[in-house]
Length: 213
Image 1 (cartoon, one colour):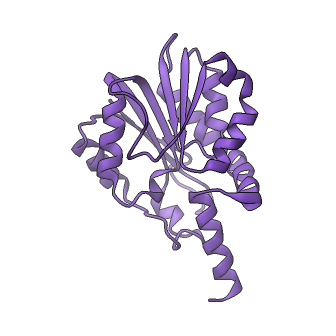
Image 2 (cartoon, rainbow, N blue to C red; image 1 turned 135 degrees about the horizontal axis):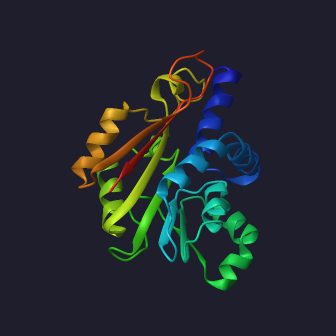
């Protein structure tokens, strides 16, 4: 394996599970590059006063920051990376101390939350790292209240296939396949928003927000 391929493999691993010093650098970069996408996903959640919501796979934590600006009463964050959890505990220590924010270690397929405990869930740029979406989406459905809202943010698969790191462990699925997996988990697609230009150069990033209830 040449040095370039080795670097892209390590980068892909950090994007899926940030850890160590490299993970901190990658997390900061993710926060910067994904800011508009995360903003759009959180806005699509349409958080109402007093609701209980969650960011599943919060990574660098910018989604938590946006949810803390919302009128939600309680925000949960779930993450598999202990280093990202540690960073979030430091960054949001005041929100944690007040009880408004609660952080949990765990994958999307096994959330440490009660049934029907959330009014809304947002998960952005996470499902590429999940081999089987069925148990993951079923778990999100389990913790959602009846009528709750799930927002799944994903990059455009055609664009992402051209990126140098996605061959190394990314599961890139057509948008329609993701929608079908949502339906199989009992989640009905309520809206599909495509962020970015309808037409334009390939380097322009396009983002899909799937809103399921």
